[in-house]
Picture 1 (cartoon, one colour):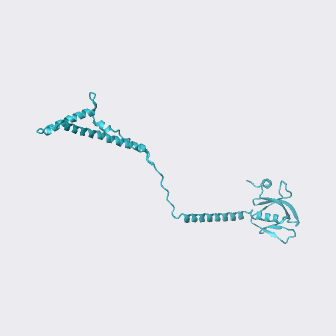
Picture 2 (picture 1 turned 30 degrees about the vertical axis):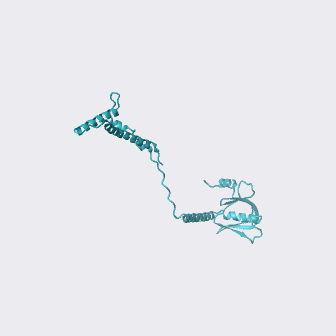
Picture 3 (picture 1 turned 90 degrees about the horizontal axis):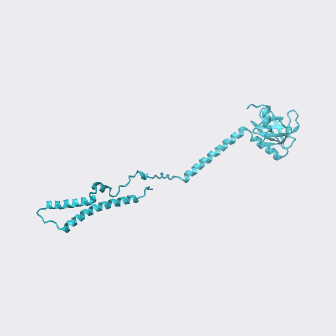
Length: 245
């Protein structure tokens, strides 16, 4: 943005202001004090002849200067804005409170002052962070390691249990003439058992009916218990939870 008189006048008369009020200003040629209305915006101190004037009489750039109180002036509550090698502005307030207020805000208006303040605040912040880290380190010398996240196995990756008699049914023949494979295999096995016993001991006495029934019952019981064991195993597997936590 270009700086010209028009832009500067708009900036000087547009609120908000950092500080404002009436002061008595001593002239450069005429050493008498004249009452002016001062407005501070940033590091620019504008002064007007009257409070609601549209254009300022002048502007003082409050940068690289010294603000000091004057006690040798005839006017009371005087202070000065001193520029090294340049003009010195002498101002007078109406009371002690106004003079101290103006001196304070003018001292803090310069860029150099703000830079020093920011550097000091950053130093204090670094000290606070450092002391906080040391305090936390003393309170927790051995931090407890965090537990690993809990994992769950996918129940659908487990193969489905076989039916209780699937293995046995695969080995048994299909029903013939209305009889199941178990009956046919049983009858055939009984015949085979009888034949084998007769062939193995032709010279011995043939087994009695009760003994033959006992052997057949034992053979049938073995077949039934195999099916029972398979059924129990499938039932226990089905009773287990699908998802183990």
